[in-house]
Structure formats: C-alpha cells, structure tokens
Length: 317
Image 1 (spheres, helix red, strand yellow):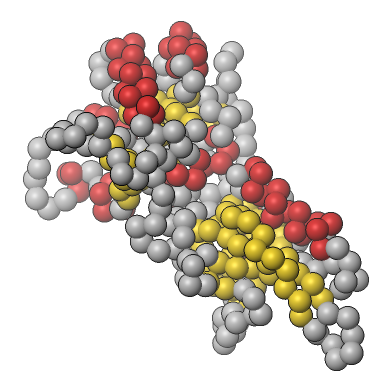
Image 2: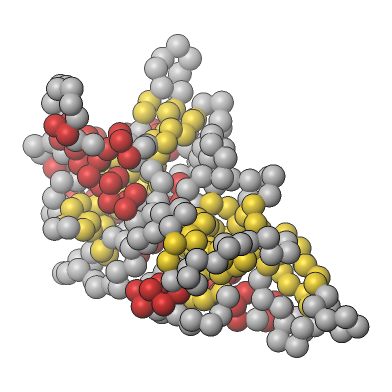
C-alpha cells in the first residue's frame, strides 16, 4: 500500500518575494518567531535582515546566520528551542529556507534567498543591545546551499577521489523532451525519457540534479552515471527495457561498478517505468538498494528517505 504524507513542495525560487501570511498558510508554523519549524512540512524557516550583524554570505561561499540567544540574554543559547530546531533539521535531512527582509521593505514582503543545510556552528556572536546592559550571545550557524554546496560554481565535491570522479550538473534545458526542441534529433531511449521525467520532478521539489563521470581506467572514456542527488548521497540507475528482471539485474551490476569508485555514495536506487513485482523489490533491497517508479503525478519508492524529496513511501502488502 502507499503511505500518505503531507505535501511540502517548495514553490519559491531565489529572489522571489512572499509574505509571511502566505508562507504560513501553506506550510504552517509560528508567524512571530525568527526561526520557525513548520507544522505541515519538512521545512524550517529562518528569517533575517539584510546587513544584520554576523549574518549573510561570506567569502568562503557559506551563509552565516545568527541564531537565537538565551531567554535572559545571557542564558545558554544551546537550550533555546529555535536553535535546537536547526540542529533537528540537520539530523532529519530537512531544509532550512532563508528569507531576508530587504533594506527597503516592499509591503512587508520577504525575499527568498536559498535552501540550506547546517554545516556547523562557527562560533558565538556577542552583541550589546543596551548601553551598560549585559551583551546578548548568539550562536553563529554556518550553512551551505543545498543547490551548490558552497554557493560557487564547480565547488560541489564528488563522492569519490576527485582525480577519478567529477560532478556534472543537469540544467533544466537538458530535461526537455526532444520533440519539444526545434531541431529534430534521434529518438531518445526509454530510460532517458524516464530519467528526465524523474529529474524534472526532483528539481520541482527544489533539489539540484547531477550526474557523475567516473574515470575508471586510463585511456578509456569515463562512465557517465544516471541521476546523482548530492543532498541525499543518492545514486540512481534507470532502466526501461522490455524485461524488468533483466533490467534489475543489469542495474544492480552497474551500481556495483559505480560505487566501487564512489565511497561517498550512501544510498542507491533503481528507477523503473512501473512497479516491479515483490520478488524484484526484495532482490533490489537485498543488494542494498531501493526501487523507484512513477505513480500518477508523483513517484513511489521503497526508500525510507522518500519524504526528503517529496516521494511516496511504498510498503509491502
């Protein structure tokens, strides 16, 4: 059967403006706090002001965000629920969505900056808000962009030795069906169409999609994988042939070959055009991988990580 989940597709792009009322109507959460876990989704909102002390992009490519201080100003900020929400997001794979109030406010609107994950706590920020009073102490969170990791092109680290493994970004224009282009080209293979459809869905959820190029033998062309989702450390091999059993066997072998050179791959999955029978699902599971297939307007998977990218979790009958 299919387990239900709350839809949490992120609908904003970098630079979009929105009101807090619209955000919380869709995703839930407190409308007053600067750090707001949502009640209807797996997003955590981080609201900030442009040019706020300590916050913003830095030359190292990371975004720094000042968390919440202790309730009395000098109390231990580690116990503050808002700061714990950021650490919880990291442990559960939830996204931190940063929104800034621009220097010139636009009708109480907030500008979406980017989606982030917690890198680490860079230190403590001390700010004197009142003359003669005790300074307030805030944790300074160092965040990395989910899309580009360090917010600089070409800085996404491969899941293996960079001498042999490189990461190749998939752009939205790459995912157009060939019939949608002006120049007629050779007909695409079924697994290519399947991969593109899945990747379009993943990108609609706010995640970047890449492929890995693996140079396994000197003098040979590199192996080019199917989908690599760095946020999940997930490598996917797509198959759409006439025989599902043959497809699964071949995909298992290819994933084994790829992961021999990519120790950073923590999750593997096989993408198929339809739900396979239970025997094949169990075979894939026994090989340490999960299965993905389309289901109407969404996608199903046997992976426990399904909620992290908006898929529906499949459980056996």
